[in-house]
Length: 307
Image 1 (cartoon, helix red, strand yellow):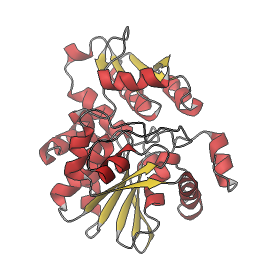
Image 2: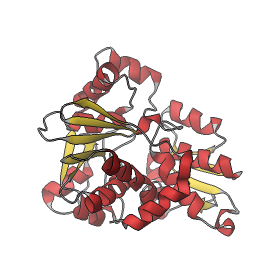
Image 3: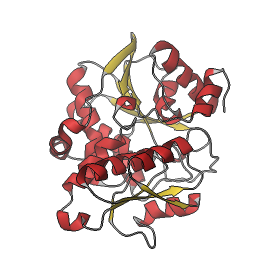
Image 4: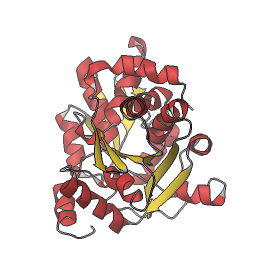
């Protein structure tokens, strides 16, 4: 758990540069926390700003580095630009072009690698030949504290709710939000959502032990993976009450529902929480984590198909 005082300090660090996103009621039991409305289209700006602003000038002297398929890359590039720092991004060469283009518009330098090398950069907290202050996209307490500011806002804006549903990629978003919500609303359940093609947390909770899975890439590029990152199983066991593996067709339907009913464009990971909540009967807050989606993927989904 991230201490609530650390989350409050993160909120002071990021200040007004992060949007206090609206909490929109979709129906009588469902609310949407629209992190897709952040300046970079994703919640990742919160953690990136929190971590970089917590670092010392000496630590930042060589610039900043992260490993990201897109959204954390944009968060780090945005924060680095504000401070006049060099930002280099270790990213899978096949990452969505829309996200990589956005990183470059923000001044970030892409270091393309294989998917395996990208995953290893997260495990190793760096990549050979790429020096600088490494901002881990997931397992960094300052990053998770920044993510936890979402939980503070939910608890302040909504008096009564039974569950918060969070997309699980590496676990940093769930850890941050869950830490805040479990402290301020102890009876609220924390539910995670993963694409069924890449759902190691769901498999691990079902088995009662950390479990790797067969990974199949999909249009839900911002969530899921072949395994849990080191240390995240221990965090998840303290915070997560339930994990849902969501079929890809349900994720696409979630994207369509957000567009039609809430007039919101969400990427696959951003629609996971709503898709996972379809059969719930309790009052739940769904985290719409991001809206950075390739135009071709969005067009396919809106045409009623699953990419």
